[in-house]
Length: 210
Image (cartoon, rainbow, N blue to C red; front, side, top):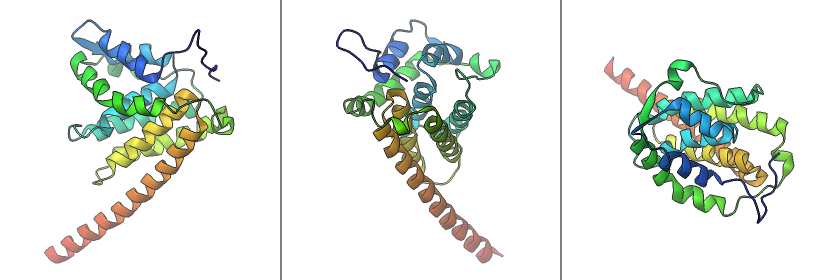
């Protein structure tokens, strides 16, 4: 359980941690392993937050949701399984990305995270305990898999639901967690609705083509 921040000492916020990681890295490229090492000390939530953040931005390139969705699901399932810190295969940890690309993601997400952090605080412990975290992990895993689906118009609501859940985990804020749960269930319902519409449209097109 996270200790309540005091005026003398407090843990860096999620936004501050991301800024230090992205803008404090002096090399042109940064490995996935280095990112995991810097964020893992804060638990699973911050790494999930970073993965979901680019998919929340309107400037996200096509196909990014599919790339981010599966790692989010894998990391969330590790949280459900009780692993002490996130684990990824060595070949993935060895991959690198341009530091400037990481900075663009962090810079683009700071306004959203900053506004949310102003109202975050530890509360509603029933929704922040170990059992609740495992249930949240299951929901995040489902949302991560859905994020990787090709159904149109679903990425943004799913991404924001994951973002809310991750912030709830990081700050032990049960209210933010409950918002994320409601948003996640709504996003899954919307995805199911869009899937039915897409299937009906595809069936109608195939029927007309035959």
